[in-house]
Length: 52
Image (cartoon, rainbow, N blue to C red; front, side):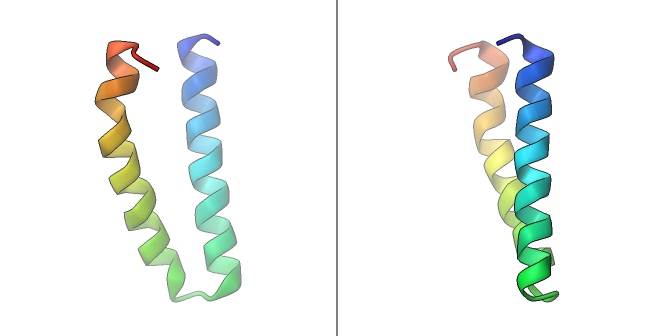
């Protein structure tokens, strides 16, 4: 899987999660955005270095 596809999948999954949380309860959207952002910051160095 090339880098562009990997990034597109990651963004799509993050967006799907945020939209799902917002549909469950609108107040959860902000928490979902924070969770996805934290996960992205945690995984970014691994993806950048090509370990995954």
